[in-house]
Image (cartoon, rainbow, N blue to C red; front, side):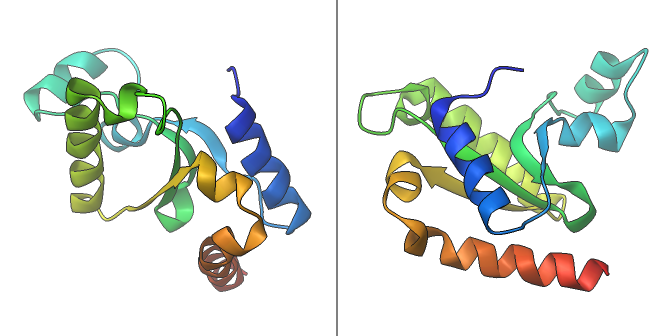
Amino acid sequence: MTVSKLESRFLIYLRSEHIPAPVAEYRFVAEMVGTGRGLRQRLTAQGLKDWRYDFAWPEHLIAVEIEGGTWSGGRHNRGGGYAGDCEKYNRAVGLGWQVYRLTADHLRGGNAHLDWLLALLRVAVKEEK
C-alpha cells in the first residue's frame, strides 16, 4: 500500500495523540458480503462495489477519507469522481458508517482543525475498553 503525504501526516497526527491506528484501505463492503471466491458476483447482485476507506476503525463504524487535489482539480472534485464518491459515502451511511472527509487544508491547518475528530475517536476508544 502506498501512503500519500497527506495520509502519512494524518497517521503521524493520530500517533501523537495516542489514538489507536486505523485499518488502512479497509474494504468495508467486501467485509460485509464476505471476501473470497465469488465476491464480485455478490457485490453485483446487491448493486455494490468493492469500495475502500482510506482509514477505518471497523469496530466503531468510523471511517476517514483523505481528499487530495481539492484545489488542483483532482479526481474527488471532477464529475465522475465526485459522483462515485457520493455513491460510496451514501451507501456507507446507509450501512451505519460515520464517514469523515479531510482535505489538505484540515491536515495542514494545525491540530485545531481536527479536534472534533479526535474527540469522536477518543469517545469510541473509551467505550471499547
